Image (cartoon, helix red, strand yellow):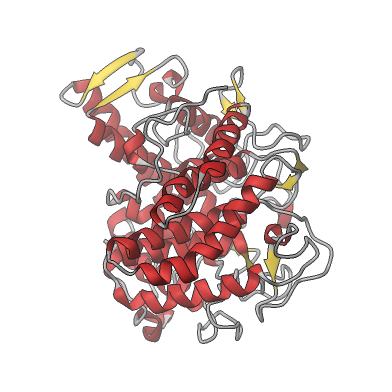
Length: 470
C-alpha cells in the first residue's frame, strides 16, 4: 500500500518515475503512487518544490501563477490534502509525517486569526476560502464565504487528535488542536444554514450538498471529540440533526440523483455528490442512505446518472454505453474550456472501491428499486433483492464493478503524462494536461483512490445508527 511512501521521495525527484502510462492498473498504480505522494509533499511550504516559498505548513494549491493563478492556499483543499497525510501517519505508521502535519496545524491556527473580507475570528472569517501563501489575507473579489472549509479542517484535525489521545498525548490535543477544532465547529453551528458558495466557487445559494454532508460529519464527530477533551458538545449534536435533515432535501427522487446546490440554474448533476460520499465514508455505517454511504442505493444511483451525463461529451472518451470514461465537474461546465478533471474521475473509482470494501464487510449486496439501474449495467438479469456473498450474483456483480472501477483508473492512465504529473484538467479534444499544473488535490485524489482499491478504511466518524428525524 501507499502508506510505506515517505517524504524522502521528494528528494528523488519526479523525473525518477518518468514512465507513468501502463497497460495494467497495477503497474500504473505502482508507478504513479510515489509520484502522487511526492506531488503532495512538494506543495508544502517552505521547502516544497512546488510551494513557491510558502510559509511553513502552508499547502499550496498549485505552482501555477497565471491562467489560472492558483498560487494560494485554500482551506478546503488543504484540509483534504492534509487528511491524506494524517491517515498515513495514524493508520500507516509513517512517523516522518508528524512534523509536516504539526506544521500544517500551526499554519491553520494562524490563518484562523487573520482578519479577511469574510470577517474576523469570531465574526465569519473562518469561512474565507483562500489566503496568500505568506499567511496574509487575500482581499480581491472572490466567491465568499465557503462554509465547507471549517468542517473539513475539523474532520482532519479530529482524526489526528483521536490518534494522539489514544497514545496519551493529551496536552497537545487540549492546548493546540482543540481550540482550532472548537472554533471550526462553532462556526459550522452558527453558519451552516447561511448563504454559501459551493466547492467549485461558482454557485451561491442557501445550501450545497457537499457542504452540508461534510458539515454533518464534522459536527457528529465533534460531539464525541468534545466529550473526550472534557468539553460540552451538545450544541454540535443538535446542529448535526438539523444539517442532516437539510441534506436529505437535495435528493431528486424523479431523476435519481442529488442536486448539487439549492439553485444555480443547472441540472444539478455534479461530482459534488460523489466527493461528498467518499469524504464521509464510514464503513461501520454499511450502506446507509441517510448518511450517503458509497454503497447506498441513492449514492449508487447518483453515480450512474453522473457518469452517464458525460457520455458523448468529450471526444477523447470511449464511446460504449457502459464504458469507464473521464468525467468532469458537471456537464454544463465551461471553465478553462470545460474539460474532464483528474480528481473527479479518481473520485468515481474511489466510490466504487469503497462500496466493494463495504459489501465484503457486510457480506451481501442489497439491490433496491433506486439502485436497480446501476446494477443492471453489470447484469441484465439482476432483480431487486438481497444477494449473499456466497451467491453467484454477488460474485458476478462485485467482479464486474471492480473491473469498472479499474476502468476509470485505466482511462486516467491513458492521459497521464510520461512524467506522471497531474494537472487539474485534461483537454477534452487533445488529451493534453490543461489548466493548473501539478494540482495538489489531483495528487491527493490519486493516493486516496489507490488506497481505496487496496481496501483502506478511514477512521469512523460515528455514522453508524445515525437517523434523520425530519
